Length: 511
Ligand SMILES: Nc1nc2c(ncn2[C@@H]2O[C@H](COP(=O)(O)OP(=O)(O)O)[C@@H](O)[C@H]2O)c(=O)[nH]1
Ligand SMILES: [Mg+2]
Image (cartoon, rainbow, N blue to C red; front, side):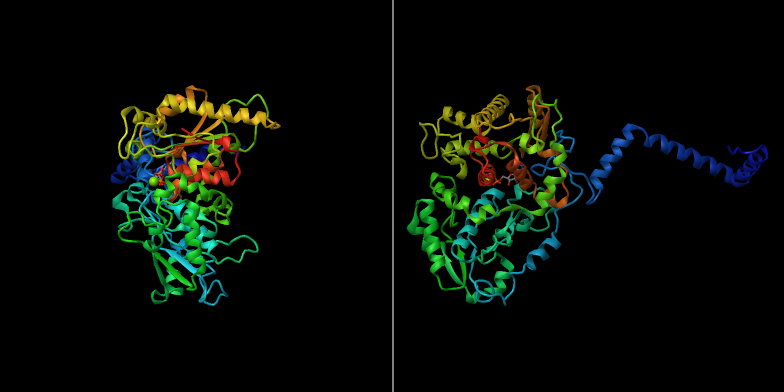
């Protein structure tokens, strides 16, 4: 072993004395050493550590560690402390915009039905500045209509209802925020390929529409020309009427424009989505390539994957063999809150039925608007009934979860499934921002759920935060069991995906 000899120690101490020096130099050296010592002491103190972490999270740009949910959620620890500052503003999507503009179908030289002589339809009457799912259900139906009319669907940015945008107004990049469609969905609607051997024209961007279909070459169809004769027709009839018009029209470039006097000038409007009339479209729409080939965008898909470890069960091992895949053990529940505190009363006042695909007859849960109400009026007892389902309290939620789990397990056993179904992971997707969610978690925990994760536990980067609603929807799509809010279009689009995936109807429930 090498030991320092007395003579070498003496040499070192001499060197040190020389380095420290005398007088002012010595005082400076002592002060500096003392400062370093104090800094080390304070950094290792927990209070100082926490303060510096918070400072980092607030000020770091791009590399922060935000959580998500409805967007304005609190820290990833899952506790509710009010709106979070992300440390980064909305994304600019430069690369994604370039991807959209460089799509291979954006070429004038392609053979019919694409290229200069191709067939196109742009729905300028599409709804905007509403929640994502009111927009999504309509744009998918428009894309399906374009496909059935042998025309390329012209896709557009999603224009946000500012109240749902994940960033505060002072961080908006433009007056009305927008997100490229390819950030939220993938598949043929957003310009991806149709299935193998399908030569339908591929969707194009609205920017390319301006190139391939200059203004003076377009045929404009005002919705008035079609809708005034349709009134409150069945969805099927509405679809077939538009399809015939668009299929038979010889013009390559068609733009549907909204009638100014119509509050809902969409081809498939809110009156249709909120009524049983939409159900006649289910059979063909659910089997269409538009539905089958719809995928989450890569941004959404990557957000789900990076958070998957959160869903691994943490509770005791089940007494019987259980699936490896955490989604096969997951019950996801959509807790539609926030603006729904008012919306549920509004829905009750107008005696609203469930929304869209939530009305499908073969699903196990239904809500019959109770007798006693009239157009724009309802009784206090009826309003109470609506609130029980639309804004359920803890007791109702706990019971619903228990019943849905029991029904699912029972159905699995009756179907002669080889292994006993296991549900021991809960995912709560929500736009709730208060401590209500923490209290609900505690209540469910006391009821026996060990693994409970919520929208707030997700770690999302800047672009993933922008599309957080689609991330939650994708998780709920994959879950073995889903419980949603029957009046919500957010829920209805999850129902759409689950049924297209051929999940057993008993696994898709409503409050
Ligand atoms: N991430 C997330 N966002 C939600 C959730 N529920 C509501 N939101 C937000 O609130 C909006 C609600 O509008 P919409 O999608 O039209 O659904 P609807 O209002 O329930 O019919 C969504 O688009 C999201 O921005 C949720 O469970 N998770
Ligand atoms: Mg909405």
